[in-house]
Length: 337
Image (tube, rainbow, N blue to C red; front, side):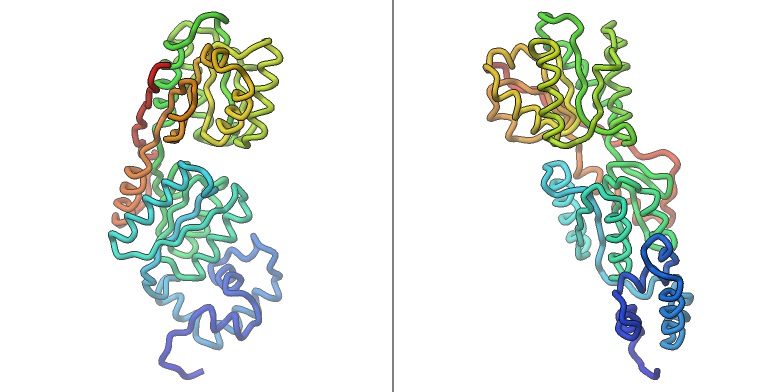
């Protein structure tokens, strides 16, 4: 094939009768992680060779040209924390004359890999991996494609990571809700939300436990309930706690605004004076907290600082760092009722 135009994965996909993301997976070596047969992979390689694409890839280190696009994957957009992160990402990207491409992956490892493969196929210049369920698997795809990448929110073993200081933020939040408790139910503390496999949940649980220990408050393992981020699950959890104690606990630490939605859905069924007797804290922030009729201490994560630092790391020639960079959080103390 004689042409002055650079051969793209779309030329190969058209000739092979497959999607561009399938071609990208074959060319970057990740096809075995998807439902792509060995026969299809070999056929794509043959066509790529006929079109001269393999030579181009080797010459350009798997990066054909600068597209001016930068990608970001995150778990969801219907969450203030991640939507704020996406907004900050877009602002910083455009300030650098880059086109931001944001995709949510629904906390699904297969969606994460498939989305990244598609972004690689579209030749993004770099990728921010935010809150991925399996950041290392995604990062390996980036490494094979020689794509610069930074882990944000959750750390990974591959490349640099920028995250909130979850441990210290949890300690400060625990200290605050402990100081605001009514003492009517001695040592009745509960932690709700998150998953044990999640780095941030583990760090927050550790901060919560260490601060309670420092305050000489007993830590009860069965009062730490990390059964997911879903609002419905959290609503059932707080309802079960209420029935078990015949009332609300003395203090409640809610891990993220997603489970907090579920907690609030149950609390609104109770008399407001009863709810005010429980010292409540949430690791995350939402301005609508001001409309509630009971106080909630919140931790606000500095997403703008995280994103700005991630872009700075992309500017560095090598993005390897064994320890994640920690961004301090901010404690938001409510008005008194």
